[in-house]
Amino acid sequence: MGAGKSTIGRLLAKELRLPFRDSDKEIEQRTGASIPLIFDVEGEQGFREREHAAIADICRMQGVVLATGGGAVLRPDNRAVLRGGGRVIYLCTSVEQQLARTARDRNRPLLQTANPREVLLGLMAVRDPLYREIADLVVETDERPPRLVVGEILEQLEHIVPRESQGRSALS
Image 1 (cartoon, helix red, strand yellow):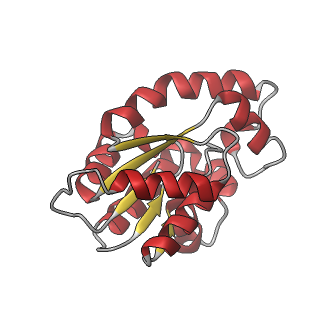
Image 2 (cartoon, helix red, strand yellow):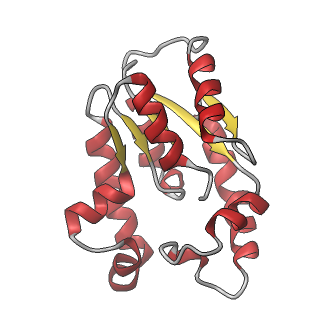
């Protein structure tokens, strides 16, 4: 959350001349509802079911850059779909940077609490090992301009041995 997936994903897709898809935006388009509203009406479990369906559909496409929601990695079936769908890039950022980037964002239901730092620390403890488990590449984004991060990703991608589904990349 707040690692720059959407911004960096759009720039990376442009550089690779591939379409960009954001799983959260896909869910909003499919439902006609915002993520916070889905959380309110269906709870996190309902949202996660919709998220899995969107990610699975997008990962079946060829030649697309996908930015997932921060919690997508929690489900083993999402991790399997992402891993099988192409190269996975984990954009890693500190809790401090996440707090700075999400401070005014009301579209993050999990952070609508009295202590978002505590929430982010808990999320990081659970999610970080899962991201690292499936990532082909881990890139730090703290206080780095998005274009610099994209340049690093492009350089590093050249050194990754391609898998069968070479044309797809997911940003988690």
